[in-house]
Length: 220
Image 1 (tube, rainbow, N blue to C red):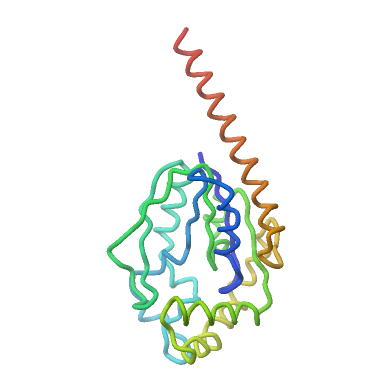
Image 2: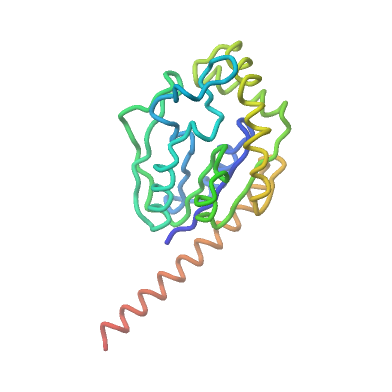
């Protein structure tokens, strides 16, 4: 069995940066699963904002059955094929990349703590609570530089869906977090890193115990 860590927070709160700060301390025994990979293959025609744009900040924009399936498999210590999502075309490609088996998986995304079945799979639940102006600026830079978006479209989307969806769906997830991080600082990452090391040590001890039991059984 693997350990699962959930990291939630609004768009631009620094979830990926935070997770990578933890990941750099380890090898393949720790992996990151990005919830952004699990957007629906195509935006839902029924899921529109008031301005008529696709709403990517609503819970129903995600492929929940596939997310649950993959997290359950990763929890069992198996490998999964994660879909590759193209943010420039807003569609899922035919490609995928494998993740696992890993002893610890960090799952990060805006709705990581939204679904109760998924929340129950996590051994640690974390929420990044960052001021809205900081999140907006980060999202602006990311979407323009990395996702080929125009300045006007990012600003329009923020007021049309990002801000209202955060207030309605994302921020309430804080109540489910084991701990809340005010900023993805090195200190906060070091705290989670220490917990991951505890998980790895426990996993290694469990494997050593299982091997001892197998050898003892073979000699009976």
